[in-house]
Amino acid sequence: NKTLTIAPSILSADFLDLRKELQKCVDAGIKIIHYDVMDFDFVPNLTFGSKILKDITNQFDLNIDIHFMIKVKTLNFSDFFNEFIKCKPLIMTMHIESMETEQIEIFIELCKKNKIKPSLAISPNTPVEEVNPYLKKIENILVMSVHPGFGGQAFLESCINKIEYLKKIRKEKNLDYTIEVDGGINETTCKIVSKAGADIVVAGSYLFESSNFEISLEKLND
Ligand code: DX5
Ligand code: ZN
Image 1 (cartoon, rainbow, N blue to C red):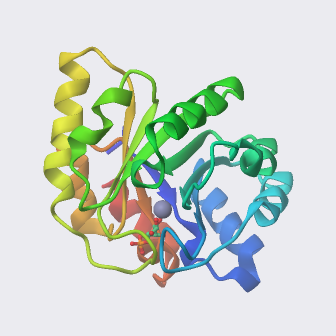
Image 2 (image 1 turned 90 degrees about the vertical axis):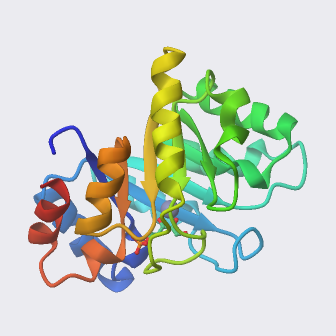
């Protein structure tokens, strides 16, 4: 499947060998990596901030897709993104459940101002229609196929209708966002979401915990 973009989630990489893990991605032809930022508030887990991303982007010529799983508490939250923006990510995703309408608007404007693709994520229990007011303004939608927080969880089929809906609406309304799917992706579920309309597929444990990264990647691209 030549039109599908695979974004490895480094959440499942070996952090003590991160350089080697990233080189594995580059050698296998990967163009974009998925970077999960968690705050132990919006989700029951804590990951990394901007420093690791800065080190990565200083040494690797990879596009970056940042998936923020963080709770926003004020209207003056833009400064939080400064160090991430300096890393020139291609896409920045915030969860629609983590922000008020006004904050969503601020986030979208902040991305546009910095030439980053604004993206909204929806968790498994969030109806897909909630993104409707933003479809004209955002450039990517992340449909979660697991509850956000951890790698290695089982794929939830509830994402399939959402992907099909987003694909249908995009055509009907002549919109041009990409549809990204994250969680529980393996060679079987990858085919399901790709058929439903996914443009970008995130894969963490399936790629980094396999015995052969390249062969596993080929199976996703099959
Ligand atoms: C989960 C993260 C995912 C995670 C996916 O909250 O958003 O990006 O790394 O991991 P797998 O592919 O193992 O489900
Ligand atoms: Zn993610």
